[in-house]
Length: 330
Image (tube, rainbow, N blue to C red; front, side, top):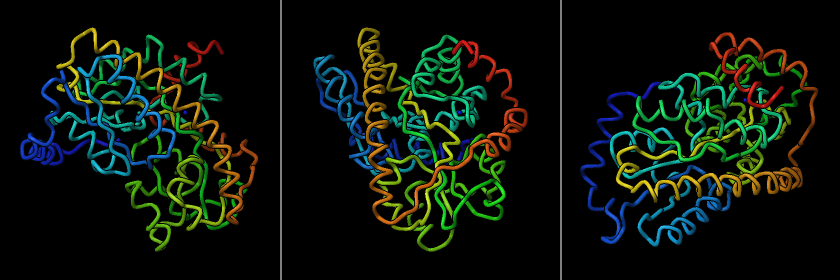
């Protein structure tokens, strides 16, 4: 601790927006409505955090800003939701920041391998001047506003059908990952063949053998019932999945400055709330996964850490890593 968006996808998203303008309209008394989608289940910590965020915003703004929450990919996968937001829809999502690095390359550092040791470190960096500056750049270049980048989803572990003890054991294994360069190169450096597919397709792909493995955080393993289609969870923790709550700039700019501050502050606060749930429920999730018969194993991380070091130079993230270390005082 992306892929470029296609013009065709943006055009399609714009058409969807135009065709469903009435459906996107909120209550007449609302200053604006933000429809926040996630690919995760309602009981996932991110889903619970979004529901609390929804209630807190309604109360704090007196109903002037309305948050609507959609779980389980109801608004599409993460890429589709970002496309909708960029096309002008009142849509937002919780996304891994690396997906946004096609616009602002420095943002990929948030998903760099073995960079953050704790959530507190990631939370501190997400509120640093350097990171917030990249966030402003994102609005200018991509029309996306990061309300908060401290929504922690947990450490990503290797999910396989065979036991894993070293990078050599991953050779030839097709592993699902997020379709962003830092994720792809991390998985490749770890020894597997990175295979980006939508999260909603992971269960069936594992079940059918389209992919051999995946990588995910404990709460998502449990929430998506991946324990039904894998045999091993190896606790590599190769990436700390720290995600951002992102909305389209067009919708955001309709909100008054006073309410923008309220929404941003609550996004940060509820990011910490959801992250606390992630940490708490993640421990239980691994216990529950193990109880189903899946083998949950510790592993010597040294070979994996060594294997992924070239990712920083390959993606030209050395300077960003130095900035992180400076912010964290290490």
